[in-house]
Amino acid sequence: MNILESIQQQRRTLGILVDPEKLAIENFPAFAEAIQSSTSQLKIDLELGQIIFLIGGSTMENVDLDQWLNSFKKLTDFKTVLFPGSATQLSEHADGLLFLNLISGRNADYLIGQQVVAAKRLKLSNLEIVPTGYLLLDGGTTTAVQRVSQTEPLCQNNMDSIIDTAFAGKLMGNDLIYLEAGSGAETPVKTAIVREVSSAVDIPLIVGGGLRTIEEINDRFNAGARMVVIGTAIESDMNWKG
Image 1: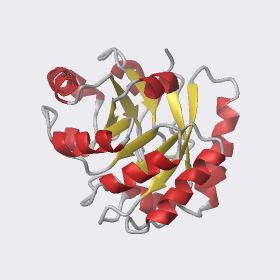
Image 2: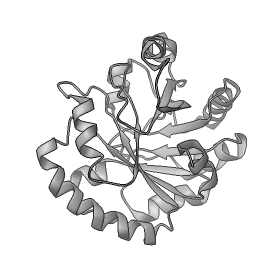
Image 3: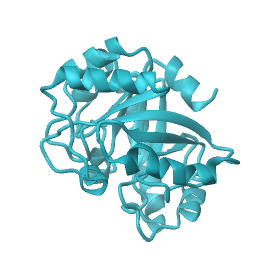
């Protein structure tokens, strides 16, 4: 089963976001030991259908991504999916790629510019490429995505704008919609937003940013998210179990 099909068919997918800039290859053994214990418990507590590693970051400078991925894939049987911050963050050593377009912003470079640059490398790619409409929502703090993309997040109180933007992303042909409050968000994407957007679009919804507890993650799944992403919680405590 490919990545998109697995997200469509599994009721609950957990995405664990790993930034190669923050996890050096020499720290892989400790990470692997900790993550094995954590994911076993998370599968039970969250009634997960699957776990996927998302690989990427907003800048990711001074990282040999091919070498990093080659080493990382030896640690796990979980699928590895690129979550790129730019067209430079591509590698054939992952299983797939979320082909992101930042539809919440109006910076043409992240709507189409980076995508055109990436297309030159992806024409002959063996990666499973999944078009993904990416919405940055205000999480109460300035995020790396906001700084790098030079775009403003959507206000979480403006439900109509968020729903209309997500629906436009679906009409543009995206296979997934990703609601992102940003790494370390003080205010995660509200469950009411997840519920309304999942009702408005008939494609799988991904939610991430600032989620730190089993209860918070469960709430987003119950509201209609097919995939929930955690990153900061794992970065802060590799033995995190919610």
